[in-house]
Image (cartoon, rainbow, N blue to C red; front, side):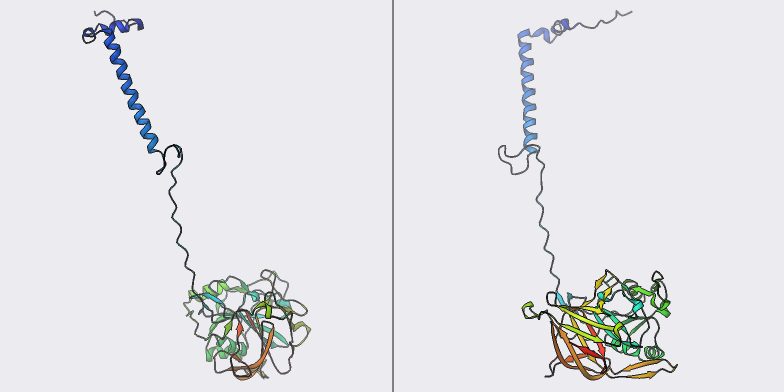
Length: 390
């Protein structure tokens, strides 16, 4: 049985080390010197390593102690490439300067009613070109044209039926036309003469068209849609969206110093409920609309309706009865007649001219074509018996 190994006491370690064969051949003095030298070499290696690590962690370009070891390395950020300025061109409908590619989209036309129970209407303040004419019984109705319905999102309505003369205006633009039926002569004309893309609510229904029963009005004043829903229907049915009509002559706003302090335009279509006034604001170079003695506002945003140009187009009209005994009107919208174009606070009297389904154009007394200010235009369709002042 081997004797139990006893642990070496600390005080005997040096003696034990001296007892080995190697250590027995060197003196204690040499041993201590060797250990001291080894420790010195280790210390030098450690210091060199720390120095290298310190230099490696400094940001590039630091000299002496100008950079702290712990400073984060920040890479230079490349400057963003400047965004190219889009080329602006004249939009065909209203002369507004828009990015190239947005100028020739077929406008969306919407028949919006103007019975007192239909007010305030939705979408009129967003329209780019509006026609106002008497539908029947002294009640006017609007054909509102929207220039870029692919980018616009607004509620429109109440939407009502169409008449033949609104079709004549819509055909100037080969417009998409949203309506809720119409007089039989208008429906006959849509089928026989084309010239528009028919978006009749009776043929399309929901979800493109929806009734709003939240208003305490008769059923005929409750039909609405949105430009988004109507445009979706157009896209889903793959209708041609390119406009082919020619633009009128447009120009920028007149210099403010040349604008008059005020101007008023009054149109009495039939009764006080359909009395229109436009008040000129030289600061914005716009006309604000009043209807029946109060500001005519849009239900969307509670915004008063404004326009850059007011056109008083005088046309001949006569009463008619349709083949199913509906009373109505025939408006003569081809040929020529008197026109007053009011923009920049100035009224210019001249002549309107139109051939076939071409666009109605406006001419001065000397035969040169009139210039309209870029922006929204309202065409007030009047006749010889309509009371107007400006």
